[in-house]
Length: 231
Image 1 (cartoon, helix red, strand yellow):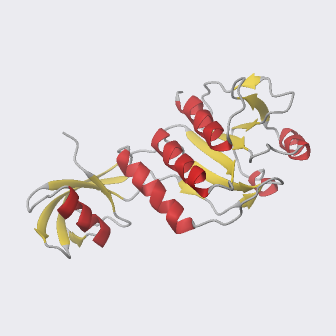
Image 2 (tube, one colour):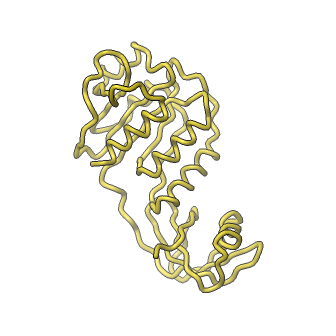
C-alpha cells in the first residue's frame, strides 16, 4: 500500500522532527483522519523522498519524525513544454495539471503575437503543479518559468526541438527519441503567426502535426506531452 505523499520545501535529515504546513495538517487530520504513529511520505519536488511517522497531531499542528530519506533520479528524458498563455485561465490551469501528471520536466508560458492573456499568477500555478505531482506519486516538480517571449525561448539549450502549428508544412509527426532534452512549442488560440513559425524553423525547430483535427491549445499541449512521454 502506497503512503500518502505530501510536499515539504525542505526535508531535514533522518531522525529530525518537523512541523508540517497548516494545509497539510488539515488534510491529514480531517480528510485522511490519521493518528499518531501512522506513516506518511514527503517530497521536496527535487528528488528527495522521505518516510515520516506522525509523533504528535492536533487541530493546529502535526509534527513528524523523519525515519528515512532517499534520492530518486530525475527521469532520463526531460520534456520542455513551451505553451502560450490562454485567455481562459481555467483551461490553462487544467493543462498544467495534466502535463504534470504525465511527467513534463519544464513548462514555459509563452507570450506570442496572438496571445490574448498575459496575467500570470505564479503562486497559484505552482500549487496546481504541486497537487498534480503528489497525486501522481512523483518526486520531481516541473520547473515553471515566468512568461517569456518566443525569442527568449529560442536561446534555451535543447537536443531536439519541435513546433506544432496548423499551417501547411507541418507534415512531421512527433516520434520516440533518445534525446535528453526535447522542447515542444504550442501556440495560442489562432496559432502562431507565419513570422513566428519561420523564426522557429530558422532556429532549428522541426514542424510537427498532432493529427488531422484542429485542437485547442490546451488539448494540443496534453497530446504533445503524452506522445513524447511514451518513449
